[in-house]
Image 1 (cartoon, rainbow, N blue to C red):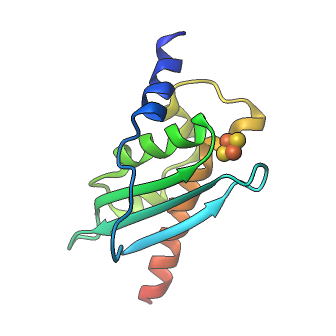
Image 2: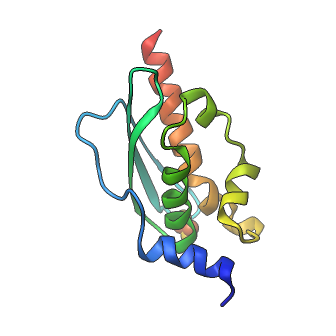
Image 3: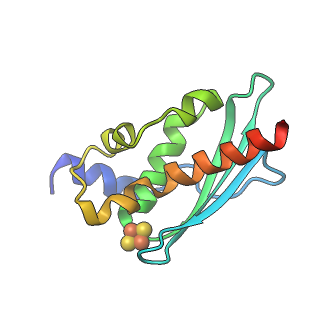
Length: 126
Ligand code: FES
């Protein structure tokens, strides 16, 4: 196994920020339509509207769980605009392994879920 695969397995076996947040400012749950796996994201914001706390719950493959874990570490302290601006390519770079076309939805599920939650939060504030 190479170091990149170990990076995925490490996050899969020891997920960072797994769990829930009571009364989160942002919550969203989504499903990978190809397999039915789910991820739910919870986030709390500080006064400057940056993510102060983030957690996730997920049922799915190693790639989807590891990407959720890596994403939560990556976005802590970032503003909502910054997180909303994270591209699919940015997410794939975080994973550090080449992702095949069929696994793309697994790799991007957590990012898309978090960004959907941010959108709902922003619409609710208008
Ligand atoms: Fe279901 Fe990867 S196989 S999220």
